[in-house]
Length: 586
Image (tube, rainbow, N blue to C red; front, side, top):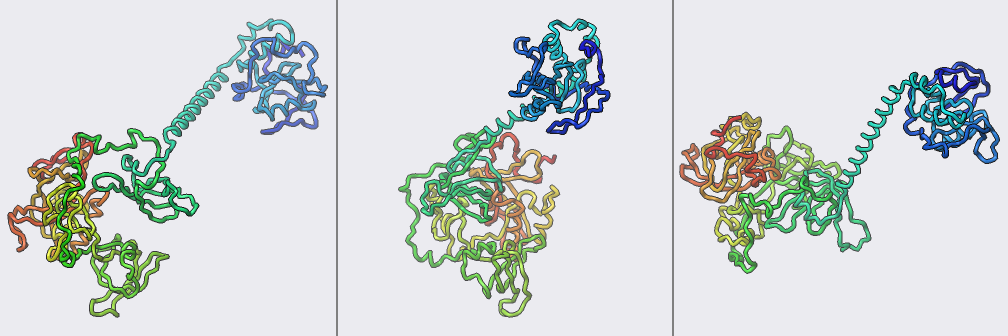
């Protein structure tokens, strides 16, 4: 067959049959011949065609070609267009097929007629439609016939490379995108590569509840159990100790157990510190309004701690504690124990009930209670609740200082923080005794969406204030702000007696209702993660129907407030005249 005639043709008749699979090509048993149509495009050209730089590195096709495999004498051979080896085809020992399967060199050229076959497409390729194949064909023509193609100009007029060029351009763009994604992933791996830090590093980092964390609870190998102490878990809470230095980490570990650790005694695995994951420390943030003062020398004297009568006079206030925590604090909390409790679930009215414990099942975390009157221990209805929903009344472990709001252990007779800061110890900074032992105030001082006269449309206002008595009040040493885009205010403590804002003193006649309302308010305000709660001195601004409160009198009340935000001067505005009802409504 004339090669020149092949150059001007698109279709040919070959007296050879072919059969391939996706990974292996095999010869058919019979050869029936037939007309063959060549492909105009091929997705394998970009990776599989290597144009030789000169004839010096290309096989000489003018002489008799023989398979280059050792001890193979077949002469019906093909040239690999990628590595330029000459190997026998399917009608020989099929060394070219084996080469293709081994090295993924999918395109070969016939040494006899200079036709091109793609094992990946399982078809012949049109050299007039694919430029890399055409360039390879020109080199092969010179190698076989020792002269250039005589009708090359005419041949070029019949080439049409557009479809293949478009395909190759799309492949290059896809490769570039994939390469960029790989580089981005590598860069991300570099930036997210975690290192071990002291646990106190958490105080400098941004984190959220339920964030995953890896930690070593015994980095100094003080325990002698020969066990690894590296764990994974979820952050529940990170708390900072007063006056800096250390803190606590509460985690839920991989076994579902809740654990507490001192930050200075553990190591945590974190990514390197960046501007995005690091918070501004109090020392670095010079714009903060409320800067913590430095503690005085250790020689500072405290109030008299030798008053034994004060110990006997102390009657700890009570608080409601989740049943699981209460059980650990009071070991005798078992069957037939009399308790006061309320249920905290979606259907609860927070009513306090008196009951006798019927059974406690720690496996399924259920507790059964028999409601009863105090004089009738055998009657009543038995109800079963999840332990996490049942809150038991117990003596409080802490008392709150009415000067700095620090929660002191009930063994402390004076406020530890006031003593360390050199603040004069007064009745307000001493542990309450005798008649004022119950530190639970009778009022809430509310200033935003918990006001009974709030006009912001908050969904919880009417429910929370239902049945309350309320009147105007004023608190000093605080300011009220509103963040742009938010329809509720927050208070910050300034310590300046000239700063103030006004609000509503809210109360209920029933003591148990007050405690239930406190629990509900804690949930609304996100205490203690979003808002803090303290007891403040509030000035009454008007006469009240409550005979126990008169104008110009001062009463103690709960107040919810926030720490001074870092972006105070950028995204927050002060509420005019310290009155939420006089705000600029958006």
